[in-house]
Amino acid sequence: MLEKIISYFTDKSFAKAVAKTILLGIGTAAIYLAAVRQIIIWMK
Image (cartoon, rainbow, N blue to C red; front, side, top):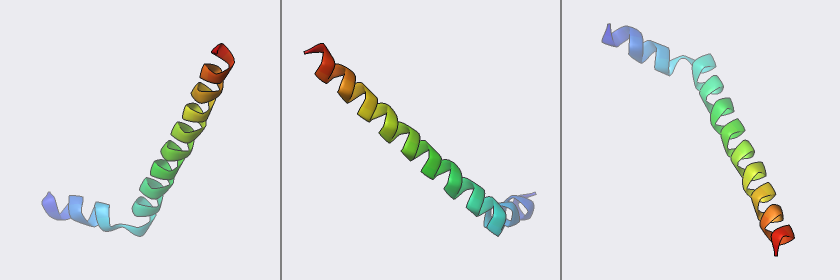
């Protein structure tokens, strides 16, 4: 069981998918924070 999990996590395509997901998450968060900052500026 553990060997299966390790091989799954060391799989190149899986690593790429995780990296893509993380980068997408960071990008989405950055856009969201920028939008919130704009709204705060407009509120003032």
